[in-house]
View 1 (cartoon, rainbow, N blue to C red):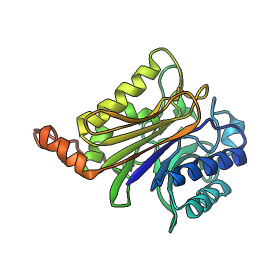
View 2 (view 1 turned 135 degrees about the vertical axis):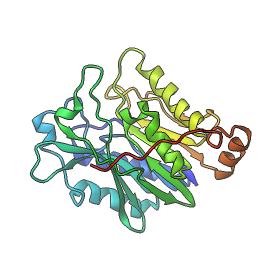
View 3 (view 1 turned 45 degrees about the horizontal axis):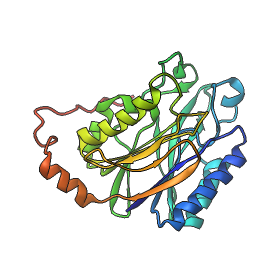
View 4 (view 1 turned 90 degrees about the vertical axis):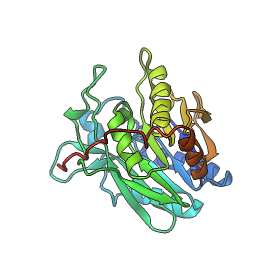
Length: 267
């Protein structure tokens, strides 16, 4: 399976963001990608979750997700992208990832588990945490893909649950907020999640200045296979299950564990 990380800088113009996603998905298609991963809040650029921004939240059958479905169908590429999802009867919204396949349209939804109440932010004032129902996965071209969002990267238990679910590549769409040591944290944590779980990690941030940029694809041994620096763009690499098997034969850390991560109760 070939995976593209698609770094962009979302704006307040939802239609313009959809057009940029379409453009980058076309690039991924020309590179024979099966899967294109876009950042958290690809739908709308978020510097602060103001009432005006929250008012632009959309349902899963709204125009933005419908536009993503059309792009997936036209390009033949499965798309993962972040949206601000409307919750009927609730002033807050979900910070969600949606998966659109060329054949079926909307195929999966992940709602962010760990809210960014850190570094001076309090995401939980405006975003509802998703249910603790376990990993959300989808198979793309024979490869099992899991997904988490941004701040989830700092919680190794969440990624370990994906390893236990048989995931081959874990994607982390993000709007990784710039700040002291934040770029170092981003790359270090992405590599750590790949190394400790011996699977691939694709971490895709909003570009500067909305995010740090530095989107990257890491292999199960911690090698960086593809990277997008400070500009919008696409990097593509092959995800090879046989590479995972090779690394796990050398480094059987998952098999050598003496305890597992218990599944959290649903809420």
